[in-house]
Length: 147
Image 1 (spheres, rainbow, N blue to C red):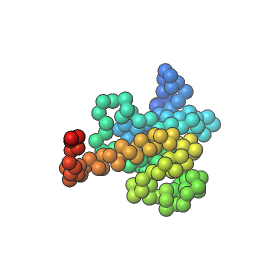
Image 2: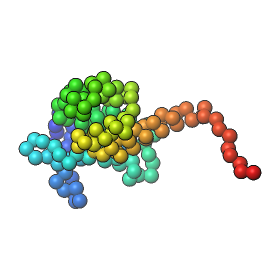
Image 3: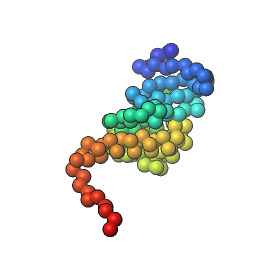
Image 4: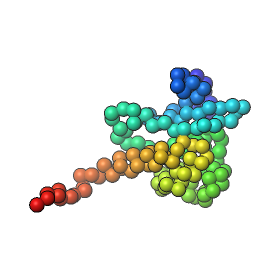
């Protein structure tokens, strides 16, 4: 185990030998390999899919971008936005939970080596569904009954 700027890194074993893991939230881990101070083969792992109970209130995935992709590497929002090819305010809105991760943004994040587009969109969907469930009592529908 190693500590790097507030994060505890865990050396993985078994099938993931050679990878390191850092906790992003209760259910999310970033795993990666590194050499010469550079991280590569970076993936975000969602432990929710391995358990029967999903998170009741998953964080907005923008938090994972900030905590798991920018801060560990000392990237500013401005620098990350430049590398992603988006406006600074676009990335800032996602990071602060004011905008969702779009499919296009998910692909950009994937191309940076920060997990897969599918993982980012799954995180966004989990967050959105949890938010919708908070007001589900107010959602009124009539059940369909075929004649």
